Image 1 (cartoon, chains in turn blue, yellow):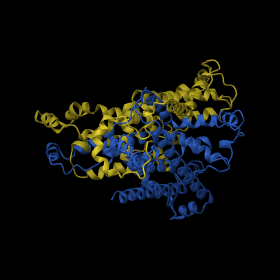
Image 2 (image 1 turned 180 degrees about the vertical axis):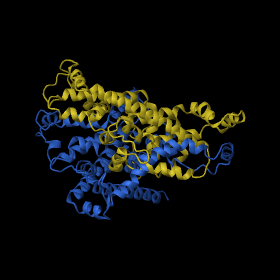
Image 3 (image 1 turned 120 degrees about the vertical axis):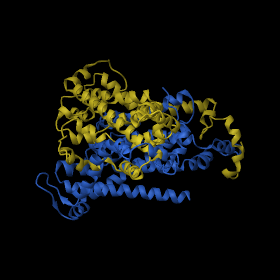
Image 4 (image 1 turned 90 degrees about the horizontal axis):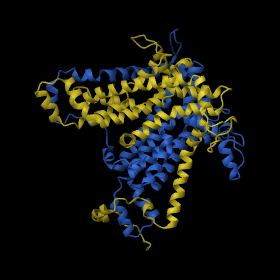
Length: 318
Length: 308
């Protein structure tokens, strides 16, 4: 098995996936040949499913966030009370902070490790292809399996798998996910283990797009390896960095399953993140309105993050 | 090797880039050029380390699934006898039902997702109509919308679908239908169908073929690579679902395998070996799909991600 590096042709297509096709004159003939509703017929299944499971839920998340939701009893309009409750609760603010810490740590860790892996394992040899494939496996393993596996590896006694490795190099047994001091870092490590190979693959695709001539030129000019990476490779990967940043940061903000399975917010609330809190509020305590307000705030945060990064990118490219 | 006083600006070297075609294997770190013994050993160590860190835990999973692990704390990379006991106990715990549930969900989910995507892709790629930009923007918007945020309203909607008044809670259909339309697949299909030459379609039209015939006999057969990409990604996406099945299922009879891992672990009579056996069954399908369709996977990954 070998994991081929993605063809560089994929890279120039990095622009918007959906340019409107109106400008193309030949398309007009296509329009005349069918009835006006033909395209809508083909689109109907997709639009109906989106309507039911994306747009209606989005609108109802918004309305729920302004209501006291009581299924079967009727909802009561409460204005911004839910938002006030959420923003004033210490639990939510702590969860928001944990989410930001976790997202930042996982994003930075995955990108740094992913870039290092990509640089170390760029190349065409068969062995490299094999190692890359093996390193990529964590990405395709279902997240629930990853969490259960790491739970066992993180067993807090001395003979737990990771603790016995720590013991070999002379460190005492760690409580990992069972100790409030190390629980967050443990979840972060698991996240990086699954995130870094993904980032590696995207970096590898980006590396194929870096102009080979520049490497050779750098060599002719006697640049050291480090200088070559610093002044040729990294600038060539700029767009890859910002895309990976957005993807990883959003993935980090909406984190749920890993935390739910590894610690479920514990011990002592030390790993409670926004999504696990929303899940508890909404489905365990039945405070759907408050939970919805939290979800809307999370959405606004992701939206702001995306827009800011896009604006920065646009300004930079000008 | 002389140490440069200053790195030369990139622009001045463009003219030499023609020569670079002679060395297509040039890499950023230039590791593949190092032929010295030290360099080779360093490379081998790095590769070994990467294997240990990323594949090691999965190897431990494999070994414990087939091993006699009684101690609840231990995972071992060294096999201590091979046994199928863990799988036997796992099947007694109903893992077969969960596995079948998972296959049912991924089978019908993928079928629905692919059908929806090719239909929508056809309209968006081969037709010009009013409101098309709006539809594209709406599809992009669904991609920007993290599904986790919709969890609470979605659970209410699934218990009583607007207008239709079906209750999908506790049914496998409730885990399938919400995944039927996926913006990523639709956009991949649209992009690919745009590149099918228009002449083919027009020739067929002159011969009197209708939209359905053009769709099935001309466009679809030319889209096999794209079908591979959306098939592989759809499979992985549906197989990896956790929150949606968690919202939909009410009891063990509708659990998917990933969900069941947690219940297995909580059960005090179940050893980690059994949990790992079930986990192995949960990870095998996606790993097999990945290994079989690596090329589709990697090309879809990079183009999809870089389109962001």
